[in-house]
Length: 469
Image (cartoon, rainbow, N blue to C red; front, top):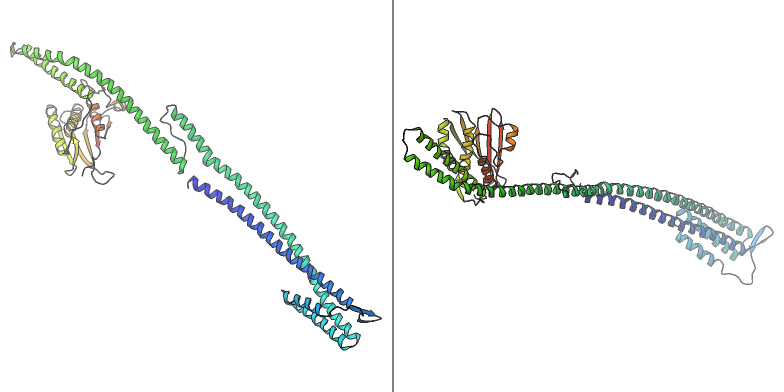
């Protein structure tokens, strides 16, 4: 999970707790308000029953043991106003028991009014009044109990709401602390690590790797920084090598130019002297050897010139069969002198590549010549070409291998092989393998060496596809 999603989930969890707490608090407030409204209604109704009883007793006068209608100068419109109020309560009553009791009150009041109008006995009025009294007392008792229950429920709801809000607040604080810890672990610490690594890389330690693990954005950034540092390291190394090679090339060019003219004069003099000596004498043989050494020195000077000059590839469509044929012809005399067999293994199925055919064939000839010098007499050298699968699935890469079964190289010698002027055989110049490496790099390829003492050496040229079909 990425840091963005982790932070989003954390914030969502924090907001969810807050929303739940707010919802519970609002529900508690709403429930309390509803119960308070119910409690206010029951209180009003309880007071109404008391007021109604007072009205009934004010309307009636007590004389001895009997209750008679009071004689007043201003008589109220009895019993219409009482019946109207009772009728309203009957319609508003939400419960059947409440509606039934109010109906009993209405019936008792209506009966009292009828008795008064018919001049019946006071005993009948007393009976009707008792009925109204019982119904009103029952209503008041129930209203008082409902009011008490509502107040108790409001108190309980308020308590639970306070507890819930307190717990939610504690959970929110805890989640906020956890959120801070996660932000510190996911953002602050990795950013500090990136800053320290940037300082280390800025000091020139380009081999430093940012110590971050995982698969989030900052870790991906760390891997890109590592790749950038590695690229800078390679470019810096290549730049230093280019400067060194430029300096060496200038020295080689100057030395070669200074040696070529005297060497040509020495060769010309030797050839002229050879015409004036006895063809069968020792002097004739020495002069031929002098000419041969002059040619050998001229070949070395030519290689120095090649190394000092910038490359301009002359690409041509060619096959491994053509490269192998040219390489075999260049090393044919050395192979014959040592009775060594060159076995060509063509595994390219006739594929062709756009390459600098002449120089690459010369590089293969150089590799075969090196293999001859390190192989025993009568041995065998393998020149193999392979069309390796490529990333785009179209034109394959060209893999060229020269394999010998000679003495091989020690790890120390192998680590230096390919460096300019380093050679592992007497009379070597240390330039040939460096030229081959340079040619491979000009083709955007690589040169690798595998060797084991007593078992031989394998030199591999990997030339990537050129994009042509």
